Image (cartoon, rainbow, N blue to C red; front, side):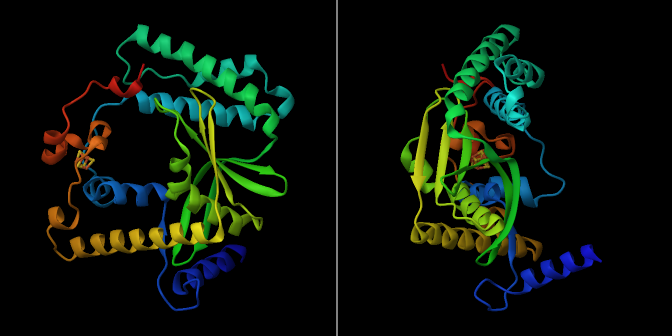
Amino acid sequence: MAAERLRSVELVQEQLAFDGIPERLVRVTPAKLTTWSSCPRRYRFNYVDRPQPSRGPAMAHTTLGAVLHNALRAYYELPSEQRTAARLRELINRYWKSDGFAGAEQSADYLARALDWLSDYVERDRLRGEPVGVEKWVSATVGTIIVQGRVDRIDERDGELVIVDYKAGRKPPDVDAARNSLPLALYALATQRMLHAPCPQVELHHLRTSEIVTWRHTADSLAEHRQRAERLARESRDAATSIAEGADPDRVFPARPGAQCAGCEFRRHCPEGTRAVPETEPWALLGE
Ligand code: SF4
């Protein structure tokens, strides 16, 4: 009975837009919208073509990012009294993988770095308080889209919710990255709708340096992100529809070659991307 009620609510949500105008809602993840925005062809390979084209080999920087995220998720899921330096080291070792690294020596070097980075990060993070959600799944209607995805962490500070996103890249992000991040803004909108609490603040936590950049959204800046997301969702939905109706995939999903081609998992299927950026070793994007 409860399941039926839930399904009816979902059906109504899909039929009515936020402003009451009947319109089919588009279900999106921030990752899908970001991929569409940066390269429609990569979007097609990832979300439209079935069977999905084969992916390239594992990249070490992707492996490293996944390990750091997994270790922190497990760490913050522990009761606070069990969050010790020894447990953190145990978790990093448990989740460690060497996929994409140049060999055992480089993998061991980065494992040692990861232990230092996260030890420093959690020590500094201790004062920020208890997370209220770790890898929290959010799903909420935001305007004409249903935003779904997993937030790295949701904190609560001074009666407000804060969206935390971990970054593991070579360089710390700057404040523009937090301000302009579509995923962070959409997660803030979805979180405040789901948890019925204000969520204006978004943060990027750089795990290699423990640096944090913060941005406080206003209602207007969140509305701008929402409108951009609605436009991207419409464009990507229309493109997928037209390809199903026989449109030329290369026209509807054009390649957008650029720096991102170096780390694109589908570059082997993309002549434009292959020409634009020379092939790199799987560990080339690890940094110093
Ligand atoms: S290689 Fe570059 S242009 Fe080609 S699909 Fe990937 S990101 Fe897009």
